[in-house]
Length: 93
Image (cartoon, rainbow, N blue to C red; front, side):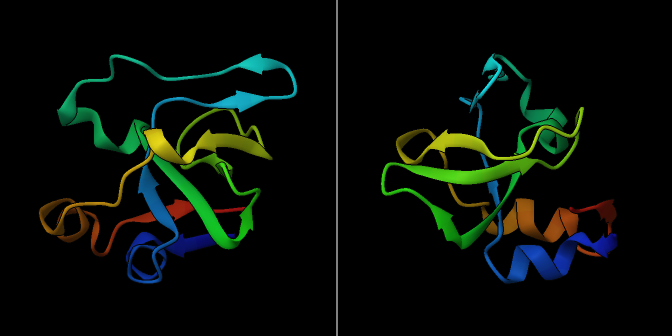
């Protein structure tokens, strides 16, 4: 489904992460430069967590689902980052 990224940002479902664990192994994205924010974005739901991890997927990438992002490596978007994403469209599963 195509969705305005801004809505998911306002709902707190878009966060910034790098460490990612999947059934197939470690699919982390370490060392992504700050100017490539879209490759660090993750999509999660409040209901999609297991206590220590947010469970979701990368916003941009190969389509891995049920990816576990350790909460201590995930952060909220800054106001400037959220503003920069306003009006952008992406495919969110």
